[in-house]
Image (cartoon, rainbow, N blue to C red):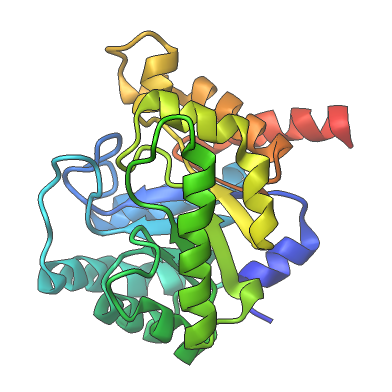
Length: 267
């Protein structure tokens, strides 16, 4: 049994902590851009309650610089083998849409893949099937006003079908509605309100809104990303109410306390 499935069997909800090994991510670019800082970042998130650590070596924020496969691999090669050795029990995922990078990371001991392109336009599904590894499949793109969640469900169902045809086990497919990827703040909020409709696809759900423009919108605009953690946690709890069992956040401590409170109230 893989680490992620074991965690899902043991716990009601999982927290995915974000470790961006990049100089230009919108919220924490540069914070972990050396090995020692990355080690301390992982240690802190695990101590605060993170169940999964999602590593990224290329920013996917709007307007970010595209990183070549070679540069992405070089960044990961400089940090991940050390993290894997330092934290052998931690469940790590890799945030990449490049199959070659994914395959390298699998061989280095990564526990799950996280594809922002939803396995479309590449052979990422085949890689996940080959190694029998869990994969987070994200919806990427705009949505029609008034039909936001319906479009997300329809297009993610296409991604699920691609995975199944490639041989990925359904229990290894986790769906992410793609907050902020080509969507307005209003659309993101509407998708959150109706997130329960995504349960019809029969896969676990990851919700990832942490510090994104939607949280800035809720706060009235022009806020520092690091001041958006309470709103991020509040929106994540709304997603949990509607069926999400995993939430992806920058501030693990705030999210953990919010989930603890939710579980005390709701059982």
